[in-house]
Length: 206
Image (tube, rainbow, N blue to C red):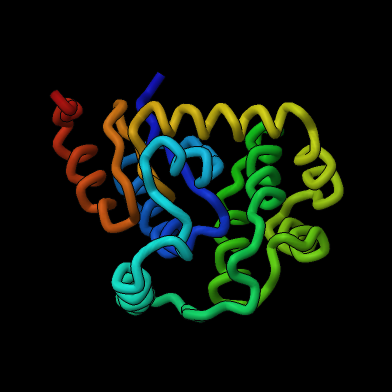
């Protein structure tokens, strides 16, 4: 099987949304596929030692806000720095992505739309009504996906993705893996592309 990029993400992550299209452009340039791995940020944080936003220092919180603006400007995306529905529980939206994967589809457009809903449109992705609209707008059967998102299989896939991300030493969202080497954050996408282009073997912690 050809190598594929493992894309570990949550729909609530601003950095996953900000890097989403760039990741897909890289995959297209190099003719590689993407495996979509919606996961629980909290489950990964438990192992990596990261903490929720409100528990971080004021310095880190301020820097995050500046960084988000830099990236949005560079990527040409319209960013609402203080969205009306953040924090919001992303579990249902992430499970919709898992359900789409289980159905053999691609959650790429829906995942981007969910991130855009939070970070640009002031919409609440914890609302099933909002998710239904986003699913329909991105070409999915909203009722079928929402129903499947409540299945044990979708929950298990998300849990498995979270465990795999933690095992690979992902620190948070987004994280990308290529040949087992993990890249944390959309600001590492150029490093990911360099590895793909060069064909170098993965680096390991020793």
